Image (cartoon, rainbow, N blue to C red; front, side, top):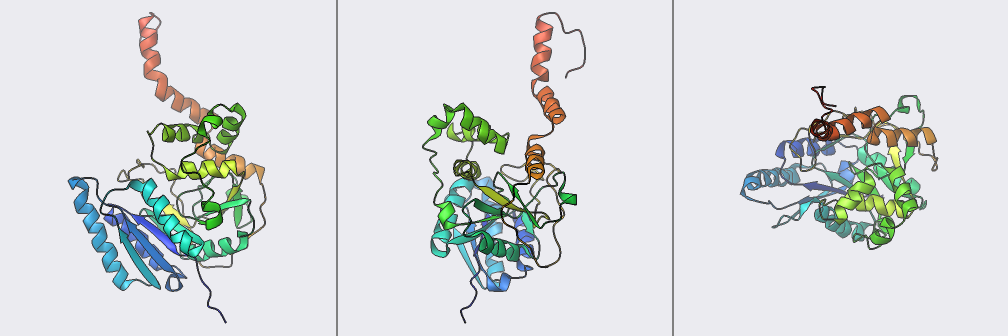
Length: 321
């Protein structure tokens, strides 16, 4: 009898030792850790300010390798700072070429005890359904999930906080976004992409202008072009602990905090099912309600309006929007 082969887990770390410890501790407690391979990619430091913390993280992962419950732990250290986007694209490509499927995490993600089990079973279940682009480990507290009785649902955008995919999907991503100019000229395409995430067209534009360095927005754009979906867990298998101001791209926010599943149970997967209410709720969670968007607009433009009104003699001491 052939031994079951599980998808390797990839972990990207940088300069957050306290977060890395919590991420590794949770992974080590995973049900299938002792039957899985773990690949840790450690990015090089940007400057002397980051150097000490990068070295602390490398001491942590070296110690972890010696004590880990994982079947195999392999560590890859970059001598230069590649940045998250280049690190993820290069690291995932290297591992997925050898294993055909991967599970991916970053150093601020705490996983449930059944995270690896959930990911592997989902990868097996949806492997031949090319409508599925990726598997997500994290799900936000969207409206309606508390009454939803199935174990998974569908989203139109990928999630980057603990995810998995297959080689035949990953290799379809055009990281150069070579059709971008055609996309910019296509109003219908821009509108449809925005329906998958209100912030995504702006993020893609920032990426192409060189103001953003994100692998995820390019991954999501490729997903849109292929008209595919992501499978989400009804109960989150990941919690992001990075919203404490220490991350490269994360401020301090509580909106994203979730309770993760604590037991290892049977998971019932279902064929792709477009639940319009959940798809809309997922969109609204990221975009904000109309009232929330209005408030944010007021915060963004309130100062400019105040100055404008003052200049034309309309502003007479009323409160800023």
